[in-house]
Length: 163
Ligand SMILES: CC(C)(COP(=O)(O)OP(=O)(O)OC[C@H]1O[C@@H](n2cnc3c(N)ncnc32)[C@H](O)[C@@H]1OP(=O)(O)O)[C@@H](O)C(=O)NCCC(=O)NCCS
Image 1 (cartoon, rainbow, N blue to C red):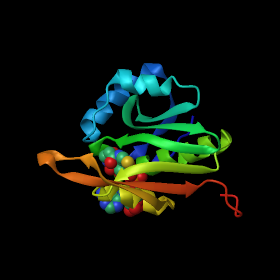
Image 2: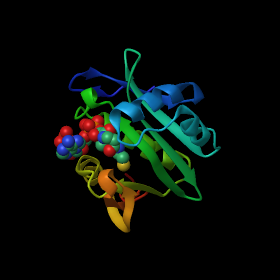
Image 3: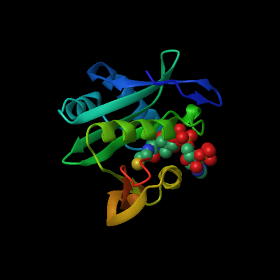
């Protein structure tokens, strides 16, 4: 169990298993504009090269991350932190945990997709060193028939400095 410290106290990050998917689904409802069902989350988590991390404090789920690894590459599939727990390092700790796990699984790079108008998530990934390597124009459908781009970001996991 990983036990980072945040400004509001201490939280733990544990592996998510299939019993965690209901909690993860609630987090996608309350913490993002892209709700996922527990079944959809379970389908991904059950794949052999998938893994999930869940952050919690005193049994209260605060955030989660879902990722996959294959052929030397990894991808963050979903990440959400409860609104009341934001800006306390939880999202960053989940991404750092996923990078470490993906490295152990043999991945050399990590990819993710983020909406171009998601300034908060872009700030988080920018700080961690992800760089934009692609764009899918008008990929996400928003309210009132508006569309926004999906940005494809990449972070090298193995560098000459060994970080
Ligand atoms: C994006 C998200 C996961 C960030 O989680 P978080 O726990 O608040 O992130 P952290 O506290 O670890 O933030 C780390 C850094 O990211 C940046 N950051 C995070 N939130 C920010 C904000 N609202 N404004 C500007 N920068 C921000 C900052 O650099 C921050 O470091 P700092 O607080 O020391 O300045 C969270 O806002 C969220 O769940 N959003 C909705 C779902 C979502 O967009 N998921 C990503 C899909 S790709």
